[in-house]
Amino acid sequence: MILAVASGKGGTGKTTFSVNLARVFNAPVQLLDCDVEEPNAHLFLNGTPLGNESVSISVPEVDESRCDGCGECGRFCRYKAIVAIKTSPLIFAELCHGCGGCAKICPRRAIREVPRPIGIVETSQSENITLVQGRLNIGETMAPPLIREVKKRLTKTMPAILDAPPGTSCPVVATLRDVDFALLVTEPTPFGLNDLKLAVAMVRELGLPFGVAINRCGVGDQRVHEYCHGETIPILAEIPDDRRIAEAYSRGRLIVDALPEYRDLLQNLWTEIGFMSAPFREAQP
Amino acid sequence: MQAGAKKREESAAMKIAFSTSGENLDAPLDSRFGRAARFLVLDAEEGTFELIDNAQNLNAAQGAGIQSAENIIRAGADCLVSGHCGPKAFRVLQAAGVKIYNCTAATIAEALEQFKAGKLQAAAGADVEGHW
Image (tube, rainbow over all chains, first blue to last red):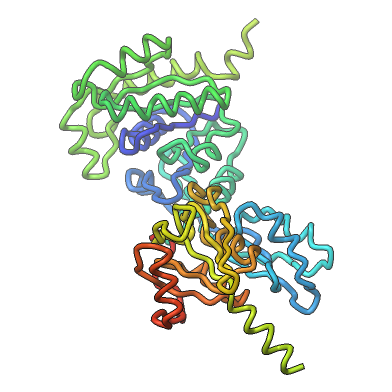
């Protein structure tokens, strides 16, 4: 079972749901922080470090003695990471997605690939939770390759929660690929609703079973609820706008530790997700 | 040999690209290079010009400056007159031997006048960061 926790809007509570769901899971569980531009799940877990590894992508390097300036590499690259007009190629490594196409297409075999570090993957253990998080180097924009490296650390035998980045762009899609269920966290505000609609369109495009969790219920209005009812999207959990939750959060404490009365709510959410997720549904006659 | 090289240099100085949103010499000079709607490439000797569409780069997520530089190099431009030029576009233009002139003129005609009067100086480097 691989659960992804996503949202359109940032700051709705993806990490809050991820870490608390992980803690109330009554068995060993993996938590992957895929928000590699600013991983924050570790702030709530204070785990024991198990190790870290550097992650690189392959970028081109040109042997100018072999290059005849034909420009095939530049015509192939859709990201303009390699350009050759009237000259031997110029390389913009920070734009390179590491596909290796330029090296393959070069008729003179003048291009070889060299590693360029983009970030690290860190692993730590906190009680029942094995946390794997990606941390993108500062100034770096290539989040998806690092997210894929984080996901390579998934152990099939253990359930996993993937804490996605906000939004609906490439890093989120890279996170959501091949998961069994997407939990979309939103807040009952016009911004929350607008971005929830984008997130719903995304998970429908990806063909994922999904449900919604509404955080900070009591602020804003009823439009998120009305939208979900109109679209027959299940609302799987609602956390009220409770000042004590914000206080616990600000101290880096888990809701389920600081306010045990919320444990049931999160355990029930696991039950709901279990009923709706792909493996369960496929097992039905 | 020397005369040939000199001649090439002279004729090479004759094609000037301007970034613009319009379609003639009275059109505004676009202060942006990579995100300009098009380029007017003027043959300064003949007085004729051609328009190079750059719309593909208006909404490009990245590489707009690089692609725009490619566009004007392919059009045979030897000089660029634009408001600003970022570091990646500068690198590509410089490698292809295109001179860059930063200019604050309101229209292409005005910019051309300044260029002809020698009031513009070739830039030694990018004058803005990428994605300014």
